[in-house]
Amino acid sequence: MKDRTLALNTALLTASGLLLRFVGMVWQVWLVGRIGEAGIGLFQLVMSVGTLAATVAVSGSRFTTTRLVSEELGLRRPDGAAEALGICLLYGLFFGLAAGMALLWLAEPLGFLWLGDARTVRPLLLLAMEMPLTGLDSVFHGYFTAVGRVWKSVLVAIAQQLVTIGATAFLLTGVPAGNLELACLAITLGRLFGAILELIAMAVVYAQDRRAHGIRRGNARHTGAGMTDRMLSIALPLAAASYARSGLSTVQHLLVPVGLRASGLGAETALADYGIIQGMALPVVLFPSCVLMAAAELLVPKLTMQQVQSESGDIRDTAERTLGLGFRFAALCAALLFALGGPLGQALYDSADAGRFIRLFALIVPVMYLDMLTDGCLKGLGDMMFCMLVNIADAGLSALMVWLLLPRWGLGAYIATICFTELFNFVLSYVRLRKKTGLRPDLRRGVSITALAAVAGAGAWALNKTINAGNSVPALIVSILFGCLIYGLPRIIGGAAGRPASCRPRRPYW
Image 1 (tube, helix red, strand yellow):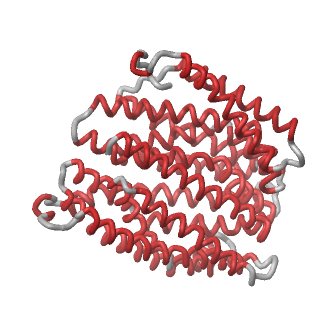
Image 2: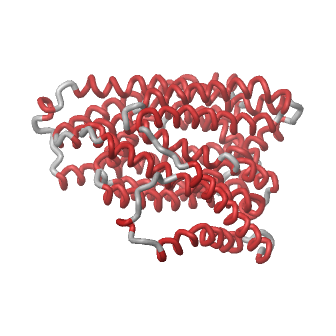
Image 3: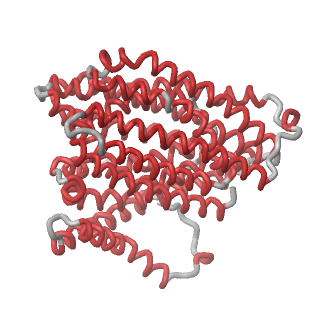
């Protein structure tokens, strides 16, 4: 993938990701007001099981599709890319159906025994119908990432989210206030409706793309010999590792309300606290990360092509540039979230607790964001199994800490668990990437970037305190833009006064 194409696709995914997350956050705020913190907590419990089922439905198919199609295109075999997609679609359909059947069969024991709440059974049954669609959708998304035409899948994703929100809002109008089970059913049914339309749209868009770009099966059976074996050698280890990670993560999420109740909190209070962290604070903290998630996703085909073409120098340059720019962005986000966390919680949710948690998690934003990019680099270099093993260890450690610490120390232990395991994951992944690519971080530049970000955060906080009128959203937007201006001003001035870029000595990007 050429640098210009990568930049355009990254910008497109970033813009669409910001739009989707903004719409999603507005929707989440509306949901909190409609069904309450306890309702959000109950739906998060349903989705903790739904996420595990979706992991089975995907079973590594999205990354496998991107990797195989990128390899075939890097080797100048477009017919092999078509064969790879066809095999991956069959794989996605098989595991999607398997996940749906398993969820139908296990919905009652999961709801009654695992989740400990009968209100989750019917939403789980409805969620099972979404799984085959999820398996197929993931393959199409992986294909469009590999071929560099992500704008097509982006448009479908935006339409799908808008349809889902509209359908869910319509269904919720008929739900009596306080009926959390019916509210969860309405949300799940809205998701299913959106998923059906998304799959139909993706199939139509792919058919048009295939005709427009001449991707045919042709002699792919000869040029792409052993495609099924190659696909399974990538997908099955990824699937097994993702099952372990998602299963442990699900256990962790199920243990949180139990641990909070054991620490002395009431059942509804524990559910509400869990909902504040998972459904309110973390979505705000992770909102800007869609910029880096877009870059991480597009790194896979770029680094894969560089690897199959034996361009080791370009690989190191790509990794350094990506992590360096990622750190600049993450430092600014961390500073602004820490400075404005309280007003954000009040403005979005009218919740002081949400603001407090936003500020706490802002401290580990650089770690969380850079871990996304590090994983993207490793996966692009074919080291996906290492990433999955680290993620399994992360999830297992999280579940163990939640089980041991929450009954004694309550909510503080849960926050400490999240922070510690994020750091654990990033350190292992970064060390691995440095060994594979020879990264050369500039620590002095990292310190200067951190200091500048702190100044930008302080400036945003001071301006917000000056112009704030009841934690208003316009005041927050102006304050954030002011912080960004402070952060970018030295670079703008230096760029205007400095030598041409072609005359400057090459330095690491940190």
